Image (tube, rainbow, N blue to C red; front, side, top):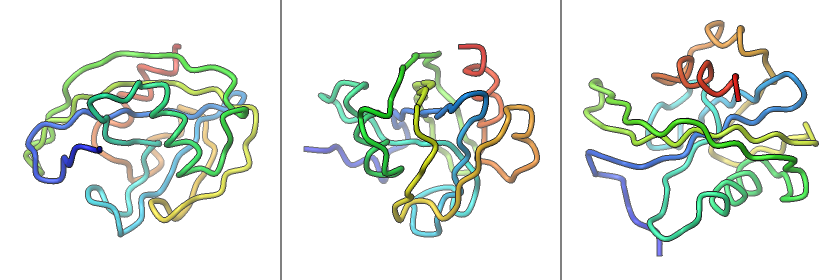
Length: 142
């Protein structure tokens, strides 16, 4: 059973920076998601208490991006830290990952409306979710 983080002040999330060759996947959040509507972000999801993080990553990639488990070449874990978003009064316990994929053919679900493959230095050319540029800088070294 999934835990409902809809109204909690603190929520653990994973942020998966999908990398294909030298570019990272940027996803535009739809207006149907709970937070940060219509902003560019990366693949993200709430972490369920008992689910292994690697299983959660595979689940998110298959559901939201239309990729298969076989498309994942490597998963690297980055930093875990708390990001305080004062505007929405929420603390995100962020678990950062880089997921290297072998297939750039993305099929979005309802959570995102567009995607782009970008070089990390291009991140500030987009209207992004809070903290995303700092997170990308942290994981781009992995």
